[in-house]
Amino acid sequence: MSTCAPGDTLPRGESARPPPSLGLLRLTWPIFLEYLLFLLMGTADTLMLSRVSDEAAAAVGVVTQYIFVCTMIMGVISHGASVVVAQYLGARRAQEAARLVALCITLNLLLGLAVSASLWLVGDTLLRHVNLRGAVLDHARTYLDIAGGFLFLQALINIFSSMLRTYGFTRQAMSIAIGMNLLHVLGNFLLISGHFGAPALGVAGAALSNVASRAVALGFFVWMLYRVMEVRMAPRDYVTFSPEYVRKVLKVGTPSAVEQITSYACQAVYLYYVSFLGSAALASRQYAMTISQYIYLCCLAIGFGTAILVGRWVGAHRPEAAYRQVLSSLKWSATFSLLLDGLAILLRQPLVGLFTENAEIRGLTSHIIALSIVLESGRSINLVLVHSLRAAGDTAFIAKIGVFSMVCMGLSLGYFFVFQLHLGLVGVWLAMAADEWLRGIVFGWRWRSRAWARKSLVTPERAPVAAHRQNRGRVEGEGWGAGAVEGR
Image (cartoon, rainbow, N blue to C red; front, top):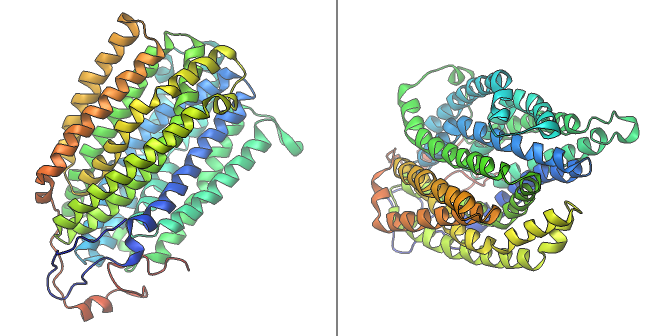
């Protein structure tokens, strides 16, 4: 997976190409494993709670949708920071990148506290608005009160893990994710069913385990980021407000958050559609989405890895290298998507059997997975292009097209398929597929137009190489300061 475009030139004094540690493969596989383990945290909840009841599993699935929306709100800062910091690093302005990171950590903490408080106040109202009743509503309240109330921990994890990856240290982020998931699974084992003398808390136990594992992981993320940064943050950087930095972060982060919030808000509307189809459809949707996440996970990792490279290239004013990298990444993403989706279709019966023994739910979920090739093939293209355009700073265009496609077309088609054509859960999947394909086609045209090349937020540092190396602190190696501590 090459990252260097032959024939590109750099300003005098800069290295000719990124270091080997910034190759797409070396960036992508740790991101893949990190997100795989992150998904395992949610799957562990679903699997273990499905042993309690299908209602408990469905309730956690509903709450997870709201938590995802809140996470996207908190992503205003972390998404913007990852793009801007990557461009500053590509421009060899490491001191300013460090100041920006410190400011964004403070802003994300404040935003996370505000979101957690909001969930405490309006959580019950949100759950009632998606037509939940009975045992499902009771379980959902319990999980939201605990996991939602401590969501500020996730806000901090978002910014620290995002910065760790932006600096090129994807393996370290993966290692922390491994520990977090092992701790969470252990907590689930102890607290859901009450093993080894622990109280059997059911849904509450899963939520407490979730919070505890995130708190421990946050401590390691803080320690690791300080360890690998080429220029470290000073205490005053956390409380020094810079209008220029905030403007750049919000210019990127706000449209990105709008686009992602719209995506998850649409999922909430789809969930509302499905709630009218009965509890079997609700459970089938949750199980199908859990399996689907693993299908597109590899494409998501390729998208994130490509975004890191695109941000560096754009910051260094090398758009041709960024352009060629994305074309290469699209080929890999489409290939992996088809292979994994074909495997999931072949194994769909035993996969669904891991979650439930209910014949109706198993049949419906298996049918949905068989149709997933239409959805996942479009998503494999969309994921790479969305992250690449975002890394280049072209976030306003993404948001405009995303809102139009997801809301105006996707939700309308979903309503028509479900309530007019009576296609049930199949109609929801077809509507989501149409949305993914439309955005993929439009974003592909945008990338080929090279309009994103004019969106760079920084200019390269033209200092001599010797002066640049002197400012690198204790980090060793060549290139853009990423990967020098990799493997320590």
